[in-house]
Length: 165
Image (tube, rainbow, N blue to C red; front, top):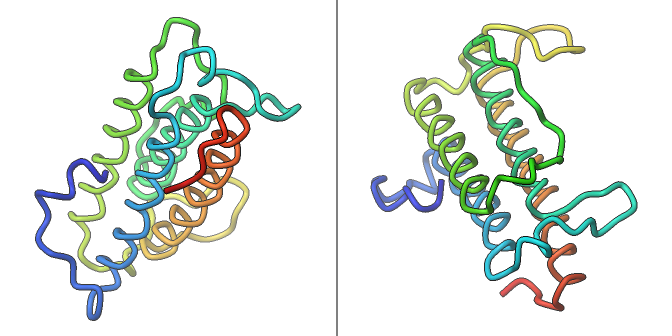
């Protein structure tokens, strides 16, 4: 995730599809975490829309999404994931963010271990036919994370008027 990118070599944004995808994925990951900074626990858990979506719940959801796509679908691991946006009362923002960062770091390790983006997943995504390439999974994760980062920006603005820098 963004906090770990200092350890990466300078990205090749001209010749490396992997570097471009990771750059945009990291930007979205960072944005979703940044939207939660400086808020109280009550604000982080406050539903901003009738469906109950809240900032902390978005991060919890994206943690499961990272694990689903890279570990369950791509690697074929058996994990029992909860992709809901309901965060247990006892979990702090720091704990939820740490779990997200750990999931993102594991996803990045998986991406690094497979240099060919055409490598196919071990299992099809449930409800879909065929296997997905790592390329497709990475592009989907940019899309999914960006969508929720946009939700987070709106929720943050509703909470305290702060808009993206």
